[in-house]
Amino acid sequence: MCYDVYTSIQPHGGFMSTTMTIRLDDDLKKQLDRLAAVTQRSKSFLAAEAIREFIELNEWQVQEIQQALKEADAGEFASQSEVKQTFAKWGVDAG
Image (cartoon, rainbow, N blue to C red; front, side):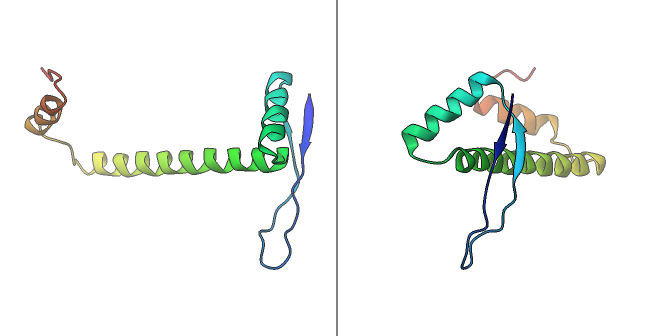
């Protein structure tokens, strides 16, 4: 099923927003309906918050991966001794 998610432009310094249509399976839609009811929040608000949190997390992960790849390309690796020390700190045998 396809459901519309509506947002609006908030006056007086609020955020600009747009309307977007997303597809949700029936079970997820029911969960969203229940959560909206018990939190007294709109489904649009909850959907926008979920998307915002998902994007923030994934942007952070992608940036960290890109930085790690740059470090690896530059040959910046932990030494075997550093790896063993880190694993030993956590009680793991690094071999």
